[in-house]
Length: 293
Image 1 (cartoon, rainbow, N blue to C red):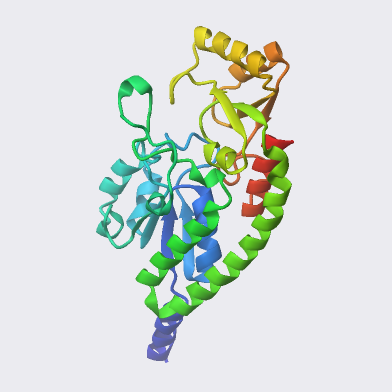
Image 2: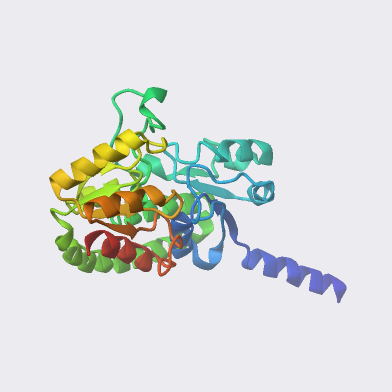
């Protein structure tokens, strides 16, 4: 009887075994769940409440990486400040850069804002281009396809399952984009200022002009001189919207807004970073509503 029970337990665990997938950020985790569903066990490493460039590399993340079958990262240097040491110390050869269980989504993206030269004099510049591509809802299908291909590579026995999920998700998201693009037509021609260049992909997609940034250079805190210059520029261009994320200080944006009669909009940079952004649809609708209304 004991032998029979043991066999049943082994068989049950085999049937319901899932791939352990770690993702660097919440938006990636949500898309993995859409494609993998009950065949994946997803862990998100970075909190959406914090700066994605500088997630605190807690020791607890090591245990999560040690047991992972697949690591999905944003790439383009976004995780460079926190993830490499964790991967190194996790001692999981399956998820190291270049291994079968490593997926850098940025390799599937048509990157924008690629610098002609890279130097610390220009701030925290990303050599491969702007890494914040997930602000554009059209990138979701690109991301989903890359994830589906990797899941099929790792778990070929369930390839039809992943293909079916991808097809269903693509159909659903295509319908969402059709309605979304119609609503986003009101964005065209709008002028905004950003704190950090988090939303360039969305702005480019929907014809919104970014007049300037509160940061004088990427990753550099605003100086008094730069702030005054930005105020003058906003007045000259009649800019009434400042895009503020959840993790940068808010005093500077408020000060500028008071001087020019602008409104500070809190815009999510990742799934769950603000209220009503916990699903993919909510996340992108909130970005649109905050930027365009």
